[in-house]
Image 1 (tube, rainbow, N blue to C red):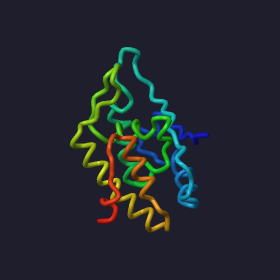
Image 2 (cartoon, helix red, strand yellow):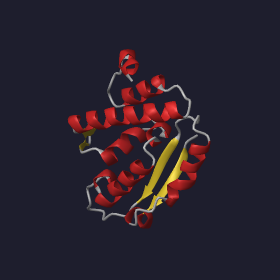
Image 3 (cartoon, rainbow, N blue to C red):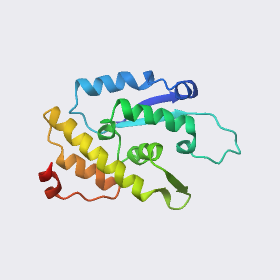
Amino acid sequence: MATAISLNQQALEQLDLKPAQAVMNSLIADPNGEPSLKFEIDYPREETDPRELSEIAEVRLWFVRLDAAYPWLPLYLDWQGGELARYVAMLIPHQFHPTEGIQYNPESLEIWVMAKVFILYAWLEQHGMSGNARLKAMTQVLGYELDDAFFAML
């Protein structure tokens, strides 16, 4: 069962990470947990506003701050529930197509994925955890295949 982090307009607009901090602290205390986080975002919009949440500057900026504070967070998102894709959409330029879903800017996504792999590989090692399979699975969700030889270089 996924753990939800509830965000409201005030927290988002004030860049307040408190709604996420208790969950993040529990993950820091036990980094061996399984991916199960999701975000419940309550950000009011006009009925005629066609934007997705990831297209709203205030929402995106909150996620940029969250990612800077907790760069290891993608490891704990509910990937199967679509949270990784949604999280990445908060950080990477993209377009949303009603039939095809999120279409990321390919170069931006590639840079983000590789940066995260380097960050997460080091973080997992620092915490004494094996992470090659986990990192490979995470990148596969985003359409990338990492070869074992790549990890041998690290």
